[in-house]
Amino acid sequence: EPEVTQTPSHQVTQMGQEVILRCVPISNHLYFYWYRQILGQKVEFLVSFYNNEISEKSEIFDDQFSVERPDGSNFTLKIRSTKLEDSAMYFCASSRLGSGGELFFGEGSRLTVL
Amino acid sequence: AQKVTQAQTEISVVEKEDVTLDCVYETRDTTYYLFWYKQPPSGELVFLIRRNSFDEQNEISGRYSWNFQKSTSSFNFTITASQVVDSAVYFCALSETYDSSYKLIFGSGTRLLVRP
Image (cartoon, rainbow over all chains, first blue to last red; front, top):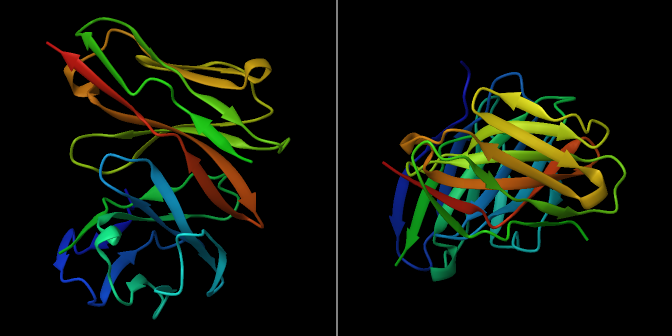
């Protein structure tokens, strides 16, 4: 069964460092998303991406965040200068056209900022 | 504004008991979707069900059933004869459509512990 894959599964970084989280969405999906879950809290929407541009972004997705689809398969989330409060689980998701909102989530990348 | 409320933060039951997880939502949209996701201890988000706002029929899938009531803006989830493997955090979510992409608004989750 096709699935969304994310790398790395866990990354530890120093405050101020740049981090890139990678995702390979399901191949025939057209919409891509990043969500974030701070430990013990709810899952929060960060950004949606379609047709090589951002469809919508939340207030959390400020100038230090960016997304990119550098080739036909990868979808990346870059955090330019990490802060302690960026420590969280980051979930990538994808959906197909007309999916009715059924998002397929990856297993998540846990980011720890020290 | 869109909002999902899961008032039960944690529920503990003994195996084989039935348990209902509550979800109440707020939206101004007439067309929307509601979801339940399971997050086991391993951390991934597992899709369980999607309902659209025009379909109030209850659904049963094995030991799982869902009760959607538009009149009370609720979408409750019942596990019958619970098992230890059902222990997880369960999230209810509401979709907000922007163009054709979907922004899911999650509730804060209900942690279910099923004891042997």
